[in-house]
Image (cartoon, rainbow, N blue to C red; front, side):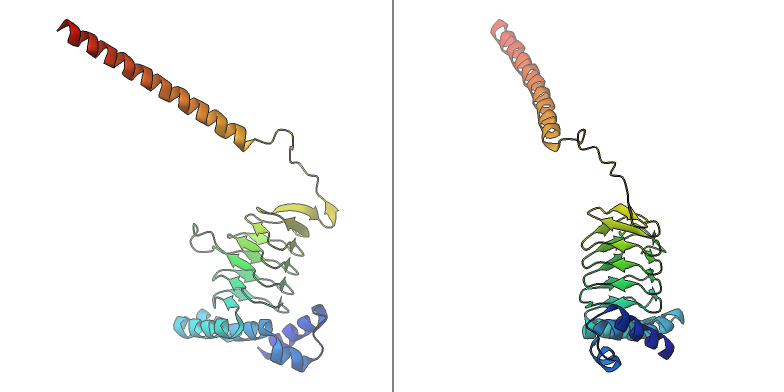
Length: 223
């Protein structure tokens, strides 16, 4: 466990220019505190001591503002920078040397059972506010832009942006944009067509009702 903490401290010092000394990192970095508390919580969880595992997890959440389920697997050299609002689900896996910024969610969609949270490969960077939802893998060395919402696997070395996220680069090379800007459906015209069809259907119903009323009146006069 102490060897893991040492690697986590070195990762922070290498990747965060604001980190000056080991003592500063050890005492003032909530991301490090969250991971350090997660290690014993995960050990307890694997040994089926679920309540004390969750107790440590909730204490860590109160202390750091970072919620890591004790069932999640966290690799070595992981940097959770700033960290406030980070949520990592029960079956999530974070590979070695990943970087996760504030507001990130590694969550599920609520539709799966068993493995329902994402797996991050090695050296993955997830920007602030990004959401990765579902039981798929983000390839090694990938980058997820801030506030992106990833709903499907990403190949290694890719860069994903947007809502929902799409791959714009793979291994530093830009991916050709296949979006057809000319034939993109117009939601306004589609809604107008739907309303016209509904008005036509209602007109036919009204005409049928008027015809029935006319026959009824004729029958009344003859009777």
